[in-house]
Length: 481
Image: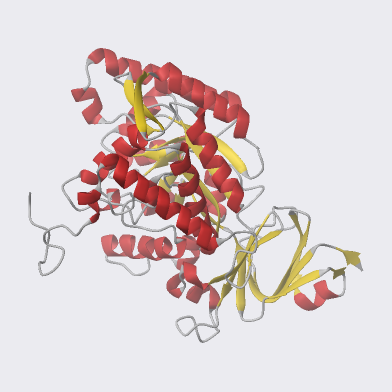
């Protein structure tokens, strides 16, 4: 008998390996932070022994879910002003430049990571800021606080940092003893902070750093002064060069209106580039994405996907890698990737008026192995295979909405939600068991988040933004301001 650390046995294993094996009564064997075997329970039982065994009977055993696009910071301002004539973006901009403190970023990171953990999201991308250009990279204190908060919970995270879009400088504020002091921050400052966070945190525990630069769309070329637009191109290429030099993911938020064509002309695309949203891109841009091997973060539940459509199906058919992101928590959606799989299927089936579009197995690939590929991590995560990281999720199928226990892969995608997650293992460490996180005080995380959210409301005078707007009840749509 071979001694290992942990055996998960008796569940239906949805492996997402190359053969897409589904093992009715399967076992996953873990030693240290790695999977050493995946197979039939009886065969495995004869070869391995472990001090801890998890009985997965009545559960689906699957790889950890991967969220390829979300925003740090949003968890403490979700829904604030979201339906009051654009105030959500204004709050984001102010909170992430002059209103937030390191304590805010630490509390929000713990809350968001704990949400991910409960929903079975073992790996997620988090942009250190909001909108497509407001990054909290004026000082390393904010990125450091975020990374420390995530590390405290134990999830795997890709933290994206980078500069804002010209014109520079922008005003950033620091709070000490209830008083704010402002200073101008330019591209050089933010680039230096991003480099420092890359050095300090990339590869530190379960944290990886990605680099980002703001998207350039038609309106930027039309409305920015010529000098600022040229400067934006230069700065994008500087950040992109660093991402290639460091071997990290390069990502951009908000591709739309000719931005893919511009990105291609700038030479910033490729298999290590991850473009978010990609709504209303042209057939020529679909071809560019596929030909360059560029990855797409499709956010079907986002407001951007209301304003335009990401041609995810056409991209996949062209040969591109497309993964699903939550765009959470901003301002009206959670990090529940089961919800986003279901939204994704209905979104594209409605567009084509065809229920055969985007089968559930493909949706599941888009939050597991395809998502891992989008992050360049397919050799490490995204499927249950010997040699890969031991990121494993158990979903309790003994729920009324998931019964009866047949066709479990179908029921998993069509009917499950994040609250059905029972157990989460990351790097071989059991971080959620029986729905409870053994190393985290949930009440303390929530209380801290409430305190920091309330402090932000007071600092920024946001009390009017947390009430119900006119038209909340009794009308078919909000009134036009």
